[in-house]
Picture 1 (tube, rainbow, N blue to C red):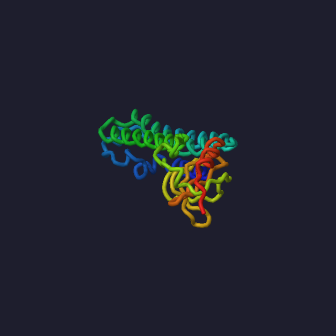
Picture 2 (picture 1 turned 90 degrees about the horizontal axis):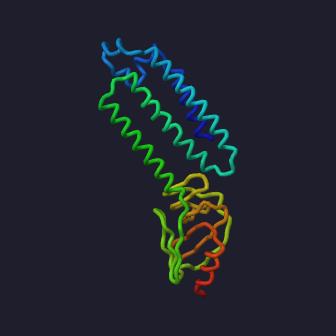
Picture 3 (picture 1 turned 180 degrees about the horizontal axis):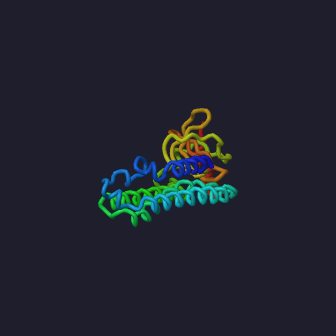
Amino acid sequence: MGIIYFLTILIGLVFLLVNERTAKYVLSGYNTLSEIDRNNFDLKGYVQFFRVFLLCLAISYLLIGFVLFKSVDKSPLIIYSVLYPLLGFYLLIVLSSKYYKSNKSTSMVLFIGGTTIIAVAFSIYIGIKPANIDTNAEYLKIEGPYGETLYYTDIVEVKKIPKPKFLKKVEGFQLGENKKGLFELKNNQLVRVISKKDTCLFLITENENYIIDYDKDLYALIKSKLIPRQ
């Protein structure tokens, strides 16, 4: 909820800051208009619309956040906390176009804003999508952007463990319990993590260590493929 509290306060500060007296200095778009265009601009109507929109955005953002916070899975809350304000401000720009004359600058802002939202949403989708693990007689292949191919002959040991509570991201993706990439354990050991479950498999190989989601059949398969070592 930290980011929701922070952004709600930030939106509230903008709500308090923007009025007819300060618009000339702080209201983007209006502050770059010529004196003639400002005289023809419905400043009172726009400021009223702007402040009501921000108030509704802040209140709805906070209330929906409280509802999602009560759910066991915190992933929807985290996704919501990022996407909702982005969509809200994009809608603000779209609705503001009825007060401003449409120009190339407005179109460019809408294009960049829309592209950014799509890119963020797509990256979240890729990050939270469960990694598919294919197996055959020689190796297991973890698919996806952070996937790996692990040969059974390289695996020294496999253990069923609870997911470590301390996992510091070095590079990759992290959203709630969804973790994919390179992480650091409490003992400063680096480990490749592709997991969203509380129970995991800890794979020790000759080169790197891995944490993946626990699966009973996969665990049994890897155990059966291990080569006894002295």
